[in-house]
Length: 125
Image (cartoon, rainbow, N blue to C red):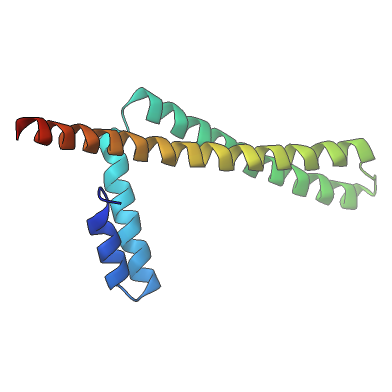
C-alpha cells in the first residue's frame, strides 16, 4: 500500500519480533493522536473501552459467584450460570467488534487525508 510503504519497509527490514511490535505501536500511537479529538474516533474508542471493561467486569462477577457458591455451599441456579456465560460471550464479541471498528476508523481517516493530499498534488501539477 502506497500510503504506508515506509512503515512496511521498516517492518520488513526488522527481523526481531519485539522491535517490529515497537515500530507498529509507535506508528499506531502517532496515527491515533492525529485524530483522537474527532467525534467519530472519540465515540468509537469510548464504546470499545466500555465493552472491554464490561467484559472484564462480567468475568469478575462470574469468578465472585463461583467463589461465593463454594464458600456458602449454595449452588448457583443454572439459568444464572447460563446468563452470565452468554453475557460474557456477548461482551467479548462486542469489545472485539468495537475495537476493530475503532482501528478501521482511524486508518480510514488517515487514508482519506492521504488521498486528499495526493489529489491536490496531481491537481497542482
